[in-house]
Image 1 (cartoon, rainbow, N blue to C red):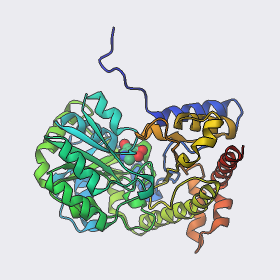
Image 2 (cartoon, rainbow, N blue to C red):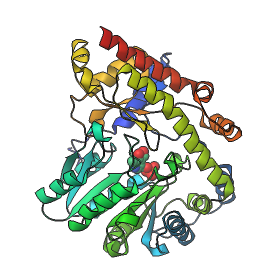
Image 3 (cartoon, helix red, strand yellow):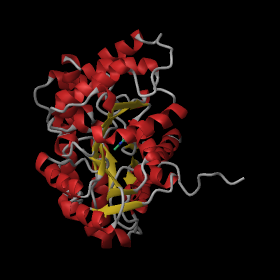
Image 4 (cartoon, helix red, strand yellow):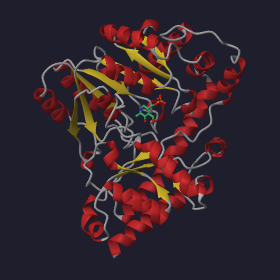
Length: 420
Ligand SMILES: Cc1ncc(COP(=O)(O)O)c(C=O)c1O
């Protein structure tokens, strides 16, 4: 029997996690900088709310609990001065599920900046959707340029869906209001539908995230959820906020939802209302999460740059996407010819697990890789951060020691290859 779905490998992020677990089980020390999971615990208030709603056992409305849809609309409106209504919101068990259903119902070409999150292209392939990659460059922090977007739009007729993600997984870079304004001019000219994946928006390190709906209200679907800023990836709750003119897409997605997952877990939706209502305790949690991530990125970026990698300080999330392209000759002599070689050798020789740039749509031979700097005890780090005014390098060595060690090992490994 031939399965209906063929030619799509399982997710690269999950695979590296399994290899790392196997190495650990065999007694080797592995630094897990592969899987991009929030290191922080779910805020206490939200956990209490989940406990209080454990008895909620009924199926809820397909599009989501009305109170939650209202809370999500209010949240976006508060954060970004927008005007979403409850009926513009769709809730699902994870934004990944929503992205998948969107790709099912959208009839057109998928535009993807390279690099992009590992899942977008495989989801497109599952439905046989055509993917057009748009090149970006390390020198401009891997950001999509209006000119390159314009060229891609001109080259492809018909309806197009751009998947834009910022702060970006895998790079950590983001777009400011001016950059979004310039991109929006192109989006408008070509009447693009844009899925703006803002799941890391709350983890902008300076709290300066700008929602695409402020620059391109007519064509944006804003994707978010509890997984990253609320540390609740395993709870599975994602949200889409639709521009009023995209109601047909929302309705089509709701039909698919009704025939697949039915509704998102009831207790989780009730707890999510508490999360989206925020309040001082949760605001403080988010601010401290940002401070910890920013403090941690600083010594990592400077140490890797010193070792010869090209990267800058990220704007948000917990990722870095260094490239070692300029040392191709040295790496080539050491038998490292692709990003997969790079990550495999790094894992074998230093115990540091990362992901190859290839998994994010980069050419196989480009020596780029993604680091997720999350291998630390987020609960302890957060509680220490809440007591400290300044988080300097000594904080990093005290509370994120494994990440610091992993980066030092990586840097020394790169230096040894360059010095060979
Ligand atoms: C860019 C991006 N979008 C979406 C997701 C999926 O998140 P969720 O847990 O809401 O399915 C992730 C998770 O890693 C992500 O990195």
